[in-house]
Length: 395
Image 1: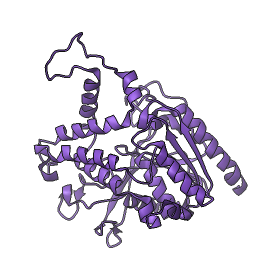
Image 2: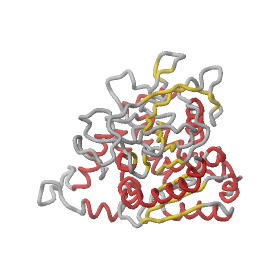
Image 3: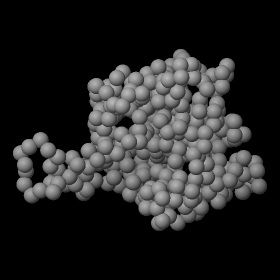
Image 4: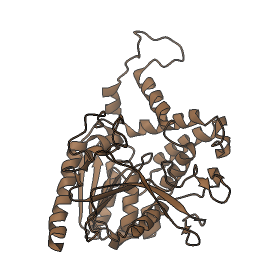
């Protein structure tokens, strides 16, 4: 990410050294009933917290991570960590999510591979990794698990929540499923449903993984061979969708890598080729191939209008009570601005309290991680206004 700093050069307002914690919910016999019709439990959830919970337990902000993210949103786990959490620039004292004021929580989603129960976790019934025996999960299931965790923490209402990309889908599901539990919500570079194009890209990525002979029908955890080639290709495909034509022209153009003329061989000649291969190589070191399959499928299934409004987004949005901020970016072709405007229109048709801003950017879908200065100003204003109108009066 453009705003990540090297160790020893903490960004102003850093939360410092943090640790990932775990909590277990859905203990049998009170297992979680999943949308697919199966049940699951117990479920361990990895999470991180920043700031202090108020005496009234009313200052919590839940941050939702994107597709291949995790619970480590800010700070560093060790002093020598090369990079801080994935949204470190936004979380900390004096930042948009001001930890002097708010209690910030981020959880790794169910189906994940960063400490939360998923296909790479041990199935207590067999003593072996779940693999493809892990049940299919949805965005709704992710949200249900988060609700169980918060209830176990004694938190019944959220001051706010925010998420970009898949995180925005979770935010939307939250304010639809639990309307009285959320005061405000920020949906960033997201959508109420994936387009056929986005579903198509997800399917190509999944096919790359399952076509890798080392995938072994998802049962590769005890093997010395992993489907790294397929997962790397999936990441390369996905990463292209995060960028924009303008950003790729600016970053790479048609420049060759360490040569002046074409080689007329099937080698990595262009800078953009080397960049994508590097992205794929790094990705396989931190992510699980089966988790990639499950989470992309969860995004494919998400459809707020069908789930809550009998096919009508306007009807679905009647349920929403939260003050809502929707943000899109001009060059985001994965979740284009028209999808955000569709949600805003549905909210306004119901006279809901909604604000919308389209930020001019050349970064494509990744803009929600890179346009931090503009996004900080927008979110700062949104949260400050709400804090002054709600929290000060409650004291």
